[in-house]
Image 1 (spheres, rainbow, N blue to C red):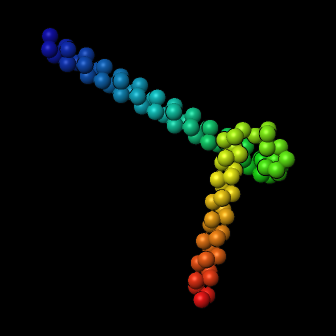
Image 2: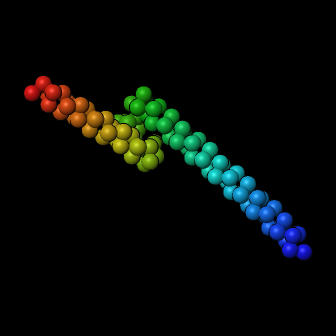
Image 3: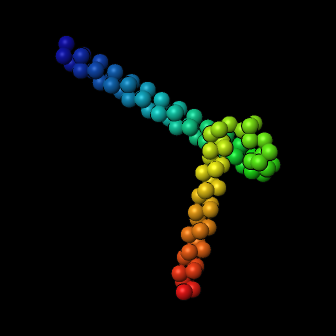
Length: 89
């Protein structure tokens, strides 16, 4: 009886682990798709200059992401200039 219980327990644990792995995979795939869609929207907005004239058509998350990217580029450029200035001094 204990052997059958142990076998059933092992089967259930295996099923739970498989279900958990499938769920984690599905979540990761959904996140990747969402990130890809967001990046595509950002790229399209930048390419078509929607960043200035049609901000109300883009979602707030897209606008926030565009702002974050722009801020990152500015900081990177400032750091690059500071590095060059330091090397030439």
